[in-house]
Image (cartoon, rainbow, N blue to C red):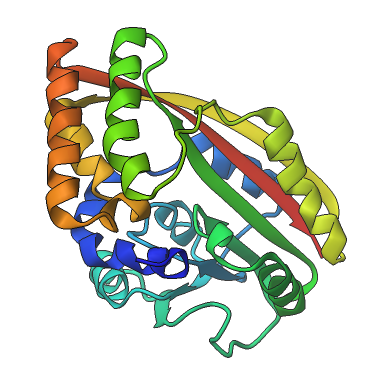
Length: 262
């Protein structure tokens, strides 16, 4: 599967994605609402709603929230999930292609904006915001169990044998998402006319059984794209490794939030 089609793989596992992918910490929304109050008078756009992991805290403000999502299954899922909110609607299409009216108070994107070419995404967001409107971009960056080096080493070896061999790439050393990366991402907005740029990091841990972690891996686009027989063996080896090392794996999440004002 070509890299430019990877963003479409999520929709093939929409139900599992909605169940396994995490939401975001309450402190993140507190930070957003300190930067821009959102209420029943606000017009908000969400880019790439996915399984709705970042939607409910925004919807609860009573704002008029429109979501844009390229995956039809995700659109159907979220229409059902948020059917009790008259202030919610979702448009099936790619943000780059969909014609939308402007004058939004806030536009936000959670773990989705990196799929959009930078120069297209930032410019369109800027043009669609009212003066003083806000763009909030945030994402979750998981890091594998740093408290269990034996398990991490074994998983690295499995990735080298299956993932990197499949993609004909040299194994890469993984590292935790850094404050420098968050700051650099925040500063991108300055190149497109935004001001009052801010960023903040949040942290949490999640613990999975071997079976749960296998299900989580099945929601990653580049993992879904691996040929089925290879993928099944790859995931089985990961599950076996976790069970050999205590049956649990801890994931350390770094969540970055970038805020910018038109």
